[in-house]
Length: 583
Ligand code: GLC
Image 1 (cartoon, protein in one colour):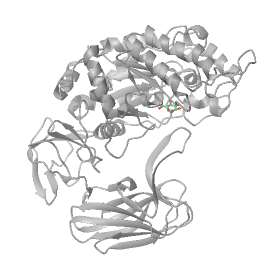
Image 2 (tube, protein in one colour; image 1 turned 90 degrees about the vertical axis):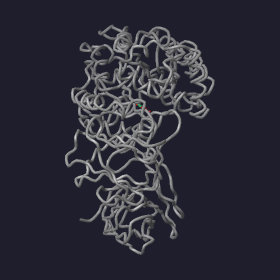
Image 3 (spheres, protein in one colour; image 1 turned 135 degrees about the horizontal axis):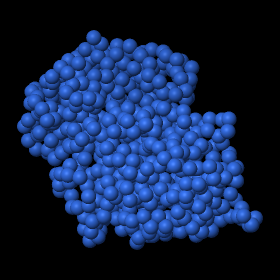
Image 4 (spheres, helix red, strand yellow; image 1 turned 120 degrees about the vertical axis):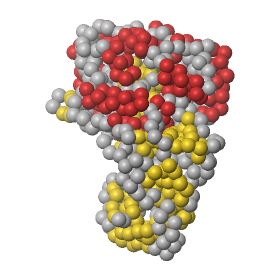
């Protein structure tokens, strides 16, 4: 079922079903945001659709290792350490006797999530390692196999309910590296007989999901992951179990076989274009999902907000992860910036909660746009130094513009563009919001703008490509840390990528190309107005921006920019073009 149809079915079902307990105690601001969108309190998708922001947590036995196995540091995503370092099952399973997250405080987890502005927590109840972070009949679990001997999932479910947060479980249903028959697990049972997925499913997976669905109160989500080649009948059984026992819970698409209620995008992916329907992107506060001692690549409040706002502006929901350590503590730097971002959200809730997608369908160079009914929320991360905020192609008349909660803002039309005259200093950090009330439903011409006062990146995603292969790609640089983009590769002599742009001001613009390949390819860049560049640069194996020169737009308005490969190896590929006005 496509997400849109799915949404309609869910809406209908929700009206019959009644409110999910955890949703009843949302705070006043939340109630207001929801009321604006006119959602029913009994709508089980409302939390996801309007909340727009949740906390993801990866916490398991791997957290005890924290990216270190004996003398070796594993720099990939920490929860994969067992598999990537080939730690033998008995040794890995024996780690449970040392795992004692004695500092764990469920209320502290809930407090951080809440002050971060998040609306729910989804936590790993069992990751691919096979260790249950809850009391289970299967003995490899935190209550029976560790000195900690408590059920942190019970405590967290209660703490979330108390704090008015939604709650859900991640469960790795297909991969289980320590259970015979689980995907990636031992091929033989303890008695030497061949292991089967059927037996793993009957003896561990299904009973554990049943435990989770029946012993932790009402759940908002069951987040199954990495379905791989799991046969459909198993997925159907799990989905049915969840539907029966947790009628208020949503399933993410990673359950497999299109049986989810909403689409989960690739890990760490903020898509470049608006996407319809219910979907989510999951991301993490540093590089790893689970705690890793060396990983201090924390997103600051600016980056968290930029990715959150862009996800909401693309029509999605942002699920942002933290990895508590082996003692059960959320790393201080992660909490610090999550909470700082939360303070901003409390000042500008309308930019996030129950906010609609951008009418432009893509980000702006200075930030992004969300909507509340007929009001645009211009979320400005890069405050223009010359005080001119430029918006291309707005097609609905403006009634009023003001700094959110502050002074009115003047505006003027400049051809197809609208220019807002802003005060010299940004009124807020890391972003300011300009609210633009329109005289009707927001409409915009989606043509890409070349801004005179902000560097603009135009991804290949938005180009017409012929004679080369345009392809969505994902790859990892560090293990498990995914990157995503659309690229044009396999160039033929006639190959070209053409962007149609709307130029605000004539002038010279510095052009960078983001490419990869080998050797020293030669690229040509030309406008339909007769300006062109042709130059050579050294290519590298990963995408990299390099300067090609100054291109001239002789007049404002529509133009095309065509990029072609003049010389280059087969591996040469193009990801985007960048323009920055020469001063
Ligand atoms: C993956 C990984 C994983 C992580 C997850 C988060 O698919 O296998 O370790 O839990 O993505 O989205």
